[in-house]
Length: 109
Image 1 (cartoon, helix red, strand yellow):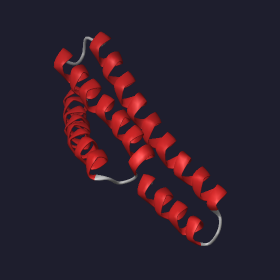
Image 2 (image 1 turned 135 degrees about the vertical axis):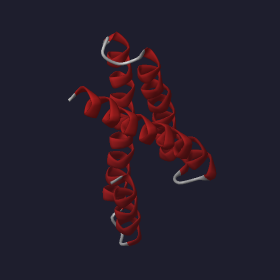
Image 3 (image 1 turned 90 degrees about the vertical axis):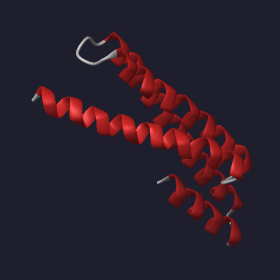
């Protein structure tokens, strides 16, 4: 979704819609930042939950915080090497977290 919005912003900018391009880029960055914040809050909630191990909550927090940092980096530098160096490992952690969550939830069924 973020990539689509940033490509849309670039398309608007090339056709003279600079103001709309800035709005589209801001929306993309905001959505990434909100997703990162949600992930970190999920991790904090899992730390308080007794049904899951504490390391599982920390994994969500450790994956969510750098994703927020990547959102800030993308806001200032676009899809630069720096933003991708931050975002890709964080996304791998979040993917692992989602898969492990699925396993935990499946076992509790």
